[in-house]
Length: 188
Image: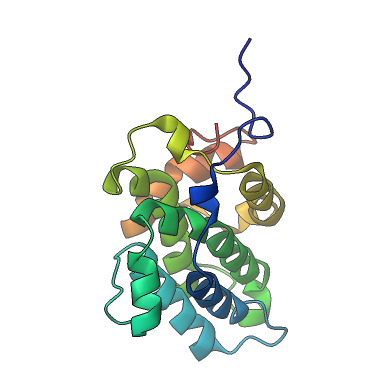
């Protein structure tokens, strides 16, 4: 009997070896959203930067050393390594909605981060030409991060927020609103 659990599945060394420059970049962007007192201009620019680099692959705007580090790893490994950072950023903004003064609709920053997350989970494997389902899987720690950080805030996202670029996210959020498992190939 085969078990598809992440605990048994070992990730090869290549997937885990992301250059320090990339990890530092992700941490700098994430740290703007993890401060006790959020500065709107800083966290908005972090959200925009994450979307441009991860989704649009706009690395020409980065420092040369960082751009060469990004080019040194396959695009999917880069995108795949960004998931925990994007989850933390989404959770931080959603948990601070009332502090930031957003009560009804999602802010632009929240929309950009949710779009980035949805893009990684649903569109990135096709764009990065990942055909093998085994290569689309995320480690158990990433799934735990998703469950522990994002699920408590799932009801802060409303169906009328999922417009324009976020429409595709209904596949993710509707099942979660119903306390069901979303059809995510990356997590199954």
